[in-house]
Image 1: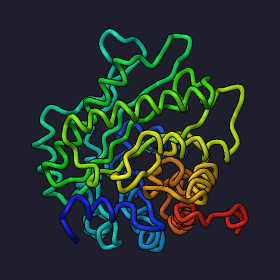
Image 2 (image 1 turned 180 degrees about the vertical axis):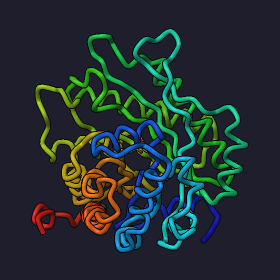
Image 3 (image 1 turned 180 degrees about the horizontal axis):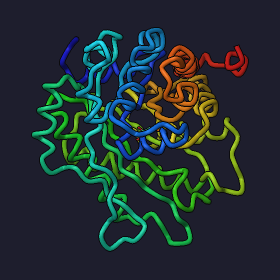
Length: 343
Ligand code: 13P
């Protein structure tokens, strides 16, 4: 495969395919395993990821890239094949989460800034050696209207860190996924859809100004934003059509056409909602970038439940994963429908 940043980025958003976000940290995967009563051991984490990466049809046909956590990038399947090798064989690009998490922002209660820039150049060199060709860094913006959040300081600090991370990635021959997430399921989450639009527009404008400052090659990056949705506790929920329309409008107003692709996070949407929203956006047509998925929960939830930590359930779990991968692959082409969900 080509090592040019532009070519890697194009491959990550290949038509009808998207990214599997399987980069849950050890703490986050514990929360997922707790839901199904599975102990959070290294071997269970390995077995769970092997179930996903060996789902041949899902991986070959619908997955263009996989985001891994440090531990997973170094793990092997039960037969000794490195996970990185399995992912490559399926025609997907292996990627790595490189941020060290959202930490309290000093002087700004309730807000965070994502850490992990110190030593990042050296870590990226090692990840490249281990086979990663893209990376991910997530900045977190929470809306809390009672407390007047977010602050411009929080948005600025996260945008700055995202841009410094992106520049370091490109220096290392790694495509950065730039992920500024405006939360739909934060501690308050009572904001309406218009507020999500305003805060996302503000955030994306700030992020692209910082990317320009750091001389980041737009053609060699992927944006991973939230969709424009109300907070999960909002009194008025929005229709799928409204979400799709406002999301496209917000992105057109903020994301340069030089960016090859936008791969959404699911952020707490149900798996079917996440597919429907992506479908409606693509079906609306006339978009300057490829719009696809980079889902964690919305791709994995049903497979995780079907698996339940038991080897015997691997075929059922892989069937559940295939179904979601296929639904999202269709949504990425604007070819999804509710009837296909039932089939
Ligand atoms: P969700 O799709 O579950 O939001 O996860 C995507 C992700 O990578 C968050 O950083």
